[in-house]
Image (cartoon, rainbow, N blue to C red; front, side, top):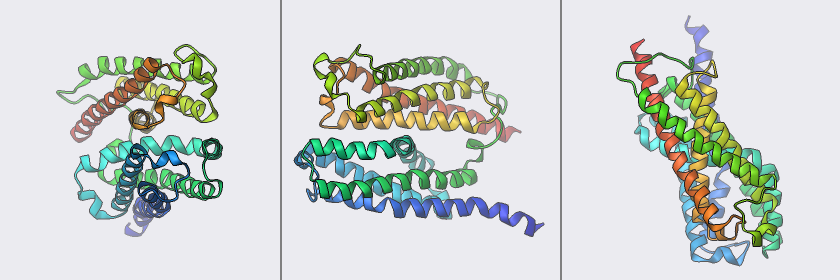
Length: 317
């Protein structure tokens, strides 16, 4: 009996180690580059030497360091003793930033080089730095979710496995979930349709004097935001209604990544020094950015309520 079960038991542990160590190693070059930029070294453009850009690079360097520590924590048993909020908060932001980027890196990488060359970037320096950035983002974007999957399977098995409907425990929060999820899903659909509309060439809500700045970078990020907002709306409604999927994991994963993406990307965009140069009308830019942040937070709150009820129902069984 022991011999038969041993391989199955070792797979999650092996997954955690490979994903965690791989993510920590692959993202180290990105951390080094961000630290160098924070201190004004090897800057691809003069604009990045400004105080606000240095603050952004320092923040992302700190987040990268947190990501490395989390990857190591996911790989070792001592990570299971960390407080839940200390793990889930940075992972929520991290997966929201990294997972959508995996689909965009093959196109956004070269597009970033072209964009920064036009802004006066040093060709040789930025070309090498961009390669390190792409490798790091892809490495941690793949490794960290793998490590998280193995970690969560041990610590929170109800969050990743089982049927969609686990039943209704006494004192559940469904009465709060349903109207809040419906309102949040409507907001996600409106935001998603708006972003896709802009990507396909729509100009309502855009500044007529800045239509020429709709480059590939902006279109891809807008399309990514729109599609993830729509996917998150489906995932959230499926989790709350408990219809639309046999398994719990697909809607949970979509809602989790979508909520983190909407929060993190829009918060980062609001902090960027060059956000005022985007083609959106100032009012439309503020509304869509703030809406993304608020919707991301609301989705995260609803996910926590769903998981709370699901855990109580699982224990009741």
